[in-house]
Length: 316
Image (cartoon, rainbow, N blue to C red; front, top):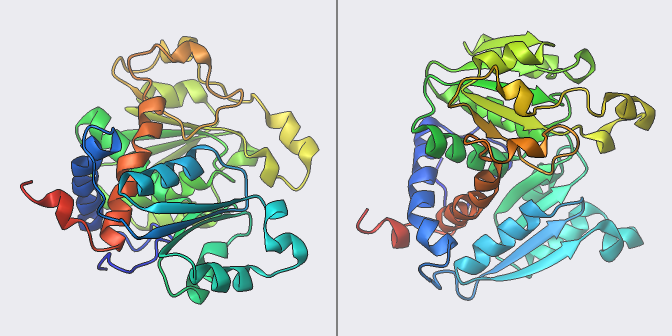
């Protein structure tokens, strides 16, 4: 898979070599992401940031990344402010917007929506989250964070905590972990929020060591990395069932007393009763650094997709 002109719909096509290329470019983009250096490599290019589902970090991160590269950003936020509210289909929306921009980022509540967009767009489409499906760029920045925090990804024990059923960031990240050696995964969740059986079976078939548990303390003791995720209440068919599970699992400073001293704590954010603020001053609390890592990683993806990565790799 070459990057130029390609869609980013799922993490499944990525090999380890692809990931290493993305991380190399992302590392080179860091001075530009922080504003220490400036570039206009994407001058004249326009990003269509189409967000039909709630977002703060992802939307602003994509927009900031494109602007840091010198491009312009046009954004639609929410169904009510788009022609979809007038009855326009997603397919027609994409056909029209595709004529205005050079890249499309789409977040949409419908599973498979990003694939639909890619089928109708001539320009590259990046999946910013398709309902309960995947969130590929979040998984990429999560992996990048693990590598930066730990020095390497191979040999890590990663504990996923919380809503593993509906948490699309979990689905994408656990898939990417199969590209590395010596990975152990511990899935800690209530029975009602377990990883989808089909995904779990696929991971095990490919040799990933996966353990399921409802014991959060057991998971914390083993983890090199704890990946905490909020309850995806908006995806529950019955809101009453979601309400029963809020606060079921909470990672706090008391829990971390049983964890490894050098444990890294990640969270895609926002948190909502699942990660206590008393963890914020823990040395391993990496979630705000994780959020900041979204800028260089997304800059790297834009550069690769638009064929501008050599600008950043010269002299590396």
